[in-house]
Structures are given as C-alpha cells and as structure tokens.
Length: 216
Image (cartoon, rainbow, N blue to C red; front, top):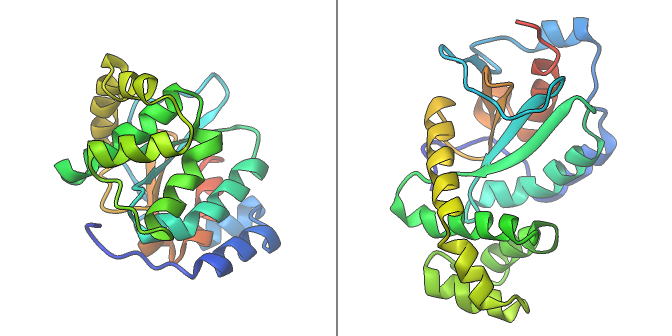
C-alpha cells in the first residue's frame, strides 16, 4: 500500500544495474542531471539527524509488504556495501495506517536483537515468495519461532519501551520528510527523493550520492 506508485524496474534488472552501472558521477555532470523540484525536493524545514560528525545521514523508508521495496532490496543492499564512506545509512519502516505497525515492530525488534543481518531479507522472502502476510502480532511470533529465535525474548523486544520510542521517531521522520510512498530516501535532514521523481530507483541512488555532496 502506497500513496502513489513509483517507477521501478524488475528486481533482476535493478540488482544487475547496481552491480554493473557506476553510481559515482563527477560533480559537474551531476549538477546538470539532477534538478531540485524534479529529481528531488529540498525540505522547507531541516530534520535533525543522528549521523556522526563528518557523516551525512541517508534513510531508506520502506515497508516489508511493499513489492517495490522487495524488488529494490538487492540493489540497495549492494549499494550500501560500496557507498561513499561519508554516508551513514539506515532504514526506517513506515506506517501509512495502523495495519503497518506490526511490521515496524518486527523490524525494530530484529534490530534490538542484532538479527537484521540474518533475517531482514528473510522477512521479504517470507512475505513476497512464501506469501506469509506477517501483518499481525501472532503471525509474526509464530514465524519468528520457526526461524529458531527465542520467542519470549523477541516478544520482550517487540513490546519494549525502546520499540515504542522508535515507532514515535519513525512517525516523526516520515512526517518531516513528507514521505509519500516507498521505497524512498531522505538525505542529510534536508532532501527527499523517490523513484517517481528520479525516474527509477537506480537513479535514486545516484541522486542520493549527489545530494550527499551538497554543502547548503
């Protein structure tokens, strides 16, 4: 469920392009190619970031049940591994209505238990390949148990005060970046882009790299 449809090539094409197309472009070429109001927007009110000194925060807004996010994930993961060293990259699960919240909590609980490296892509596969909805608490708990995770400890993280705080922060970031759909990207607390604006998600990653070089 998205607020608008994004242009996105097939998963195989995106993944292949991430591995074969150079993302880095010289600054002059980027300046000609990417235009404010067309390829990205500059936020009217800057958003506070958590990036360490000298780093530019990059956020991928996503939803586990979004087919476009699922298709984009391999390319995004490959890009993260080779992205410029000055980028501090992380994901934020969105909620356009209350039905999204269980999957937000799933993500934050996995993060708290250091299980994202093991299970993040497995969640996408469960939803989009195995057709498990994973959009209700009990469905998630049952699935987590099947992954060999201690369900009691997972429930503790899932329902924790920390997760509640992260849900509030995610909602604030989603509103502040004016997120219209997923997948989409926020850069440096100042800029927002998505596949509709940039044309496709491969271009989004190029736009993100360009925006990370801007000083103002």
